[in-house]
Image (cartoon, rainbow, N blue to C red; front, side, top):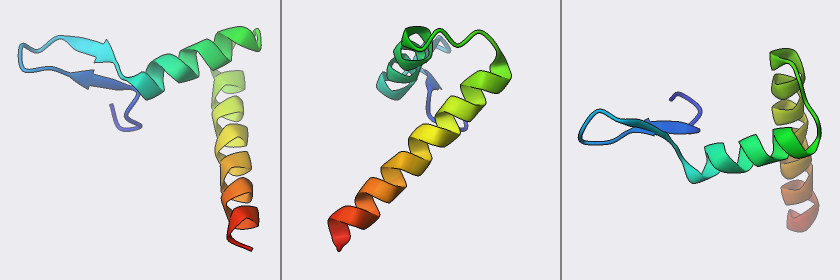
Amino acid sequence: MRLGFVYENEQGVIALSSAGLGFLVYVRARDITSVAEAFAAGYQAAAEEILDSVEDAD
């Protein structure tokens, strides 16, 4: 819940957010099979997004 990948609705049902579904598809597409690889992929994706935003600002 902390990362915004899942949320709890008014009825207490926990579901994937759009970001969570996107990350799940990303993980599946890259054939990631372990939690460590998933964390590393998330870190890499965030780092690339930050670099892209810095380059766009220049």
